[in-house]
Length: 130
Image (tube, rainbow, N blue to C red; front, top):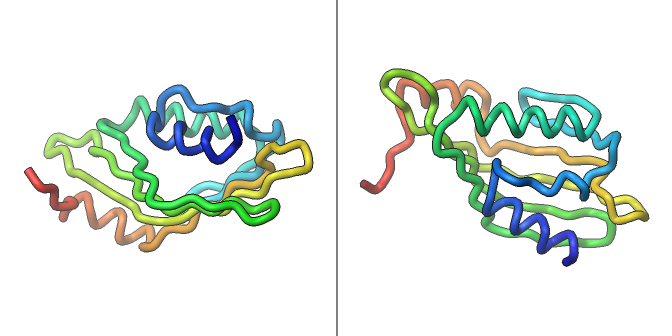
């Protein structure tokens, strides 16, 4: 299976059973709240999300590769562990760089909103079609 197909499968299962073997040991990760190096730290961050938040979903809207760059568009949603159980979501994109061994060496997430916009969702939760 190629890396694009693996990523598609990982997005469908997120945050469970991710394929960490597609990442270099010293992968660089960055998003608006985190910046670190190492696949072990990446694994811990994903594990935290899966245990701390409820109903975590990562919907993939698009994925493409050009040379050593993979770009994805997605929406990450979850329920915050608060008594009123606010539904939260972040739309964004990822830019992944792949080395000559086919491993992801850089994973940078860009959000379509600010960190403050995300925090506001604790008071004004995302509307769902229920």
